Amino acid sequence: MVLKVAHRGQIPPFIVMDVMRAAAKREAEGASVLHLEVGQPSTGLPEGVRAELARRIMDDTLGYTVALGLDGLRSAIARFYRETQNADVDPARIAITTGSSAGFVLAFLAAFEAGDRVGLAMPGYPAYRHILTALGCEPVLIPVGPETRYQPTVEVLDRLDKPLDGLIVASPANPTGTVIPPEDLQALVTACGERGIRLISDEIYHGITYGPAAVSTVGMAEHPVVVNSFSKYFCMTGWRLGWLVLPPELVRPVECLAQNLFISPPALSQHAGIIALDHREAFEGNIQRYARNRRILLDGLPAAGLTRFAPADGAFYLYADVGHLTNNSLDFCARVLNETGIAITPGLDFDDTDGARWVRFSFCGSTETVATAVERLTPWLEGRKSSGRAGL
Ligand SMILES: Cc1ncc(COP(=O)(O)O)c(C=O)c1O
Image (cartoon, rainbow, N blue to C red; front, top):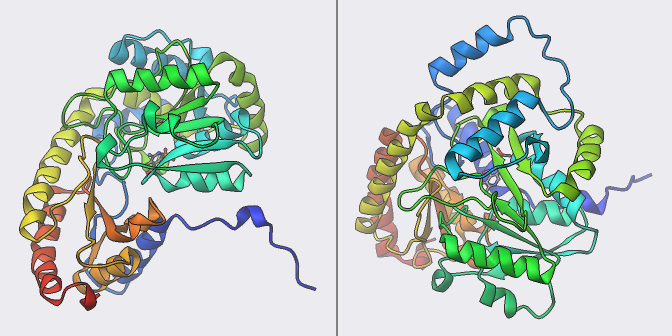
């Protein structure tokens, strides 16, 4: 008898993870691969943080913590907001999560009913729409482009044919890197408050900007759900540690969901998070490296014929138009990997229509990796230019 496979699990893949697998396979076969696919800093925790963590956990059993996380970490995050945003956040509103990914599951379950319509920018981070789909919510894809710097605006919301129950914004955004100016962000928060739209603000790339800093929604009176993580600024992808700042009415629902779904976030990682927050300045050198890497791509790729990019104000991605070379970014990236050993991500991960003509370069690796990638890619792209789209 054929057993049923639930419809809910039949969501599209997170394509970048498939690219990562293909790249790892090539490496295992002995090929040299330059990783510009995943948003994973090549530097881990600074030595000082590791040493302090090793000392602190000697006598700790590292058992379960309470579901919302260690009080010491929740207070350290509240202090972080006081120091960086001049905002007073009650630590009781902070929930520690297993990466921001688990934060999304908790926040969406607590805030939205099955069938609720949740808006999100396209191109945008794919897991938003796929998690919403798995939970039975309706992702409402809002196409955005250069005219709104790839971000949703109040005017864009006004043009939707049916009202939304929720809206997800990310600033800086993945894959475009664009930052929403403070006044536009406040306008969106206010408009959502007036219309009863629950705003989810993904602030995972805060601290990684190349112009004006991104402003948090954490101090705003409307209490959007703030999502953040130790994965990006703090380079702790594999530690699986993130947090939510919740409006008061969602704290207990999130606590009960977290108790039942995850019991607690990882204890070891929570201790590491407390120490990392104490050593914030030790991570600043990484931002300078990302800025150098970004410049190498922005200077090098136009010489290779790629000239149209999203602004890349922050995060560590360059979203580039390759529409003159292909109408299938999946095939294009597979060929780039096979023929040059450079792993990059197809735009189709972020936008299931126009993404066919875009690719994303992640530049959080070493400067040598990024520079070598430009060197290798330039002659390859030159070759494609002469063969044109038909060549791919
Ligand atoms: C915009 C955005 N949000 C959330 C995440 C999830 O990160 P994590 O679960 O490691 O906190 C990512 C990962 O790349 C991301 O780009």
